[in-house]
Length: 531
Image 1 (cartoon, rainbow, N blue to C red):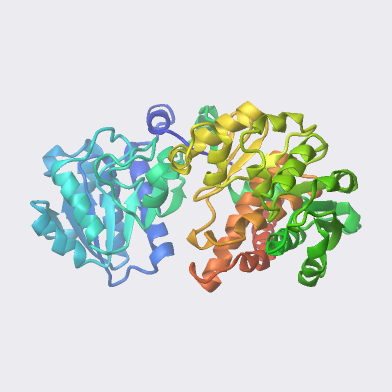
Image 2 (cartoon, rainbow, N blue to C red; image 1 turned 90 degrees about the vertical axis):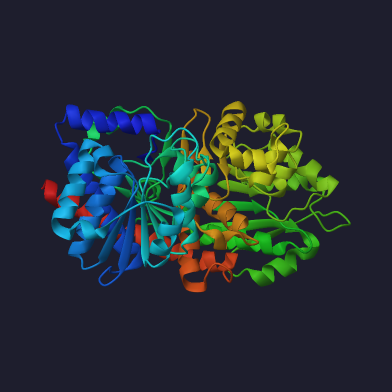
């Protein structure tokens, strides 16, 4: 995991790096500028022949922009600086970087900001805009010329690269301070900032790239924070290894209690996802009258027909058979497509006290707990719950989907602590929280995943990893990360609007392979270096 920091924590790391490790601020600035250019080209391609306008403030954020400007010129870009203040007002290090740039480019590349009328055509006439206006120290509302400059950046209709974080965004809360830049890509330095993953920051940051600027690892280790960003390295370490002597029993038997008339698709998606993530066996418990429909959709998974209501949902009389079903499985998922039929709700509530093995509750299993969350305490092994904001709001008193989204980290953390279980709060930048206050944020995923069935895929992936023996925290984080990664791979093929949940399932093996190939090779190189 990579730690996510507040502005104060990051400023303290910078201070220690400069004063104790004796790495000059100018060196950190050079590394930051190099990171901006490197990630810009990864995101947008070569800058050769392109016009790049960099809006520079008077602080060190502007200094990073001047370094990037100098390096972009070396890559044959046409670079223009829109300077918000005279050099006499710049910070010492920013002024030094300004002078280095001017020595190579001349003052003709510097355009002092005078007005919105002057700035807007300059920005519109650019191929790329870099926002190096305001940094992490901002704490009050942006007004005046800076607000006008932000409006001009947003109105230019050009790709925007934000330096460290979008100008006008609160570095800790993700709130907009009066005005804020809407970035296509945010290149942040040292470690990611908390505001990039909260509230409006999620939308305004665009893609996020983290640049290592050489802060000593011992200083990072000393920072106390319970909030981290999931990484490929973490997921690779969590995933079970598949040994040559393995057989299907080695990788567990996932049981999925799901489905009702009209909703067998949810059960099928969960089952397929569990198999694609590596579970050895999968069986779905389904209402009897829709069993044949589900069997037609599944080849590799098995089904278990169960007593049903007249509405063709799972009946209360299925309890004993479902308890036996769970006992014969390694891990359990309950919820996809169950419906909210009153008798089925009663059944789900009765099942909770019999949960004595790793489990994930989603969708209608969560809805069945509305007003009855105390039932979670009866589970012999605390389950994972995977609510979207609407479902989370039903579990929390006086909450709405909007209040949940306004405090995603806080909401998930409090519920995890109060109920003693792992919460996977789905949505943009999915949050995974556990009872001790530890939180992991998922950097993968995209808007194309806002389509029917993607939550069922996550449920299946999670129970598939639980069946393979992963503990609840590890299974939750690995499933969430890989779920988003599969979504990103599907979106690359299909686009956001056209992708389906089934497309994601087909990309799960590719996601696993990419992580394994990249990191197993790195592990071998590290081992060989040690030898």
